[in-house]
Image (cartoon, rainbow over the protein chains, first blue to last red):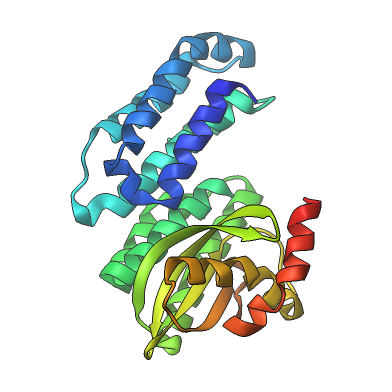
Length: 107
Length: 170
């Protein structure tokens, strides 16, 4: 596992196990992990033969989710959505084979 | 099963904080609900098992009747030298005492006989989280498999040596 995907996985687990972490630094840490992996994803898309826009959309959606501050009522679904997207991003970086369809089913 | 587990955990939190109706709606609209129609049969059946497991959880939680005191209670437990991070999905008021519940959404089925060993680290976690507390049970709820075992707290603690040996071997 690359350190980049390990950071994404750690960020996902943090939000998955303790949703309030979304409001307590977890979103910032997750955004940093996403941004540190961003330079690699174009090459990753080429290596796997998948559409770059689909891969980029995963990063975009996760970033948008993490920048939004949920209401207290929205906290649990928001943290779960963010964690799910981060798990997906970490998985893409680790997977030996990924298809565009696989990616789109995550979005 | 990571993403379905994440959604199922969120649904359990919503159930205990907001009630069953919003929790069911959330899970149905989440990736789990969407994946029940997945073209990959394994993905679809896995998602359906989570939906069914959540309905089972709602029913059995209502029958249990104990009220939620805390969600996502975590503690680092030392089992004869090994540190283990233990997370209880739900801590429950049980009269004047407390109980813990762990809700599993993946992994294999388990035999009820090994539940006290599974509950051991969580029994220790309750003691760390509530140092002056009195404890009744630790529940191991395998929701996806629709199996639950309520382990007396003392019976879980009695398995410390066995649980420690397992963690030491991992």
